[in-house]
Figure 1 (tube, helix red, strand yellow):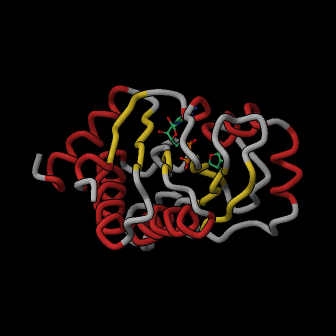
Figure 2 (spheres, protein in one colour):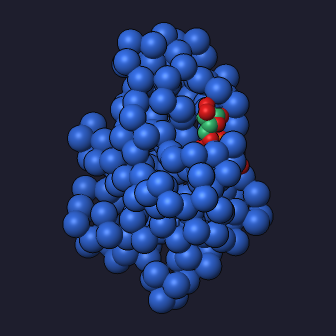
Length: 176
Ligand code: APR
């Protein structure tokens, strides 16, 4: 079995260009599109994505729903809804961990072996980026320890600062 370290890849870039089996979208609970990475994914996938999302009945924060990827290079889009940061006493940390874990569970369910994540909730939803990176890495590592089906998780950061937060979190949790 590939060791854990080799299963997690950190990149700086645009998730709509990722060729992973699945890319994760940081959506809102309507699943009807928005700005940030949600907007980028819908623009790149084309209008059929919105049409499929419209039939899903929304998504509760921390849960995840999968659609096709249409014009994107990926096969699937896993839509998840991260928490809006409200100061930290509304279980935002737990909801963010659920979003990562349930997105990976969806990947296993649909047979996606490689999954690319954006830094969920760290944009419009204002979740502190360093804490979010730590939760993301910790949750992904725990899931990969329990699920061999996932061969690679790619953390696709949109800025050097976001990449650095995730690099530090990987160093801490993988004792690199
Ligand atoms: N590729 C990768 N990451 C991206 C991209 C992209 N093309 N575009 C933005 N990002 C990054 C942001 O820089 C941020 O680090 O994705 C992370 C998440 O930011 P948002 O997209 O703002 O998502 P989030 O904070 O979870 O807020 C979700 O914003 O776009 C709306 O409809 C969405 O209402 C929902 C809310």
